[in-house]
Amino acid sequence: MDNIAKVGNVLKSALLFYKKHFLLLISLSASQCFIKYLKFLANQSYNRSVILEILFLVFDLWISIALIVVISKLYKNKTFDFGEVFDRVREKFWAYFGISFLVGIIGILAAIPNIIVLFMVDNFIPKLILTILFAPLPIYFYTIFNFAPIIAVLRGYDGNTEEVDSSMEASIRLVKQNFWLVVILLSISYLVNVPDMISGINAYKLKDLAAMENLISLKFLIKNLLVLPLAYIIDVMLYYLLSNRENNNLVEE
Image (cartoon, rainbow, N blue to C red; front, side):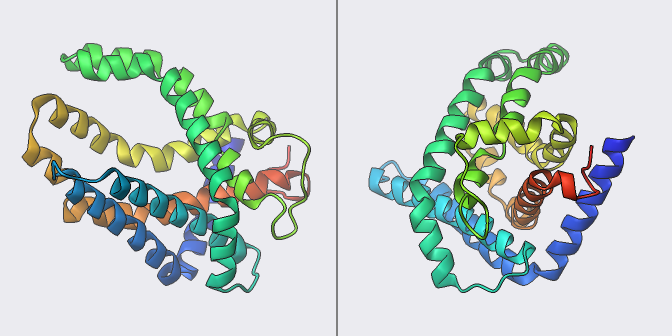
């Protein structure tokens, strides 16, 4: 029950924060959704350029880092300008990319049984049972390393002190005493995308282009446009709360 109360407090704070800074956050979110839509359109062409794919990835990562930096500044009630944000994005791009890539690879390796099930098992009941059975391993790794990209961006910034351990070790340390709290809060944002992931896999298996195009519909874009900033807010806010848990009643042990 204690974790449920904490989840409620974090969500309430995140929603109030989102409401207060809605226009700014939605502007960044719209930029990222626009890039994803352009990438989808480019993927429909057989002549798409590798350079274009790299540019889409770079801009997508830039906006992700910018969201982390902006939310951090707003959370601490600090003034900032976008020149400062751009400098931080440029400075931390490779660190964020490297950590995100490493965490992604670890998560994918842990999720190989789930991926096999999703692609190879057609019957719904066995697919559901096997997915639940194999889910704990990737959930565990994604949870313990969840804050690593955020730490890579914010470490040494805005009063955050440098630590001798790596971003991944620091993330493990933060999550260790608050594992279920982090799992529950991450699930709220991640579960929103599960139906689209399943639909995408089914459309790919059936080579159903119309179904694939439907995934990048107006409804999809609006959902991601609205949910994306909230997911970042929860992540950054939870990072700060756990980092200062000894002085914060919300997460005191």
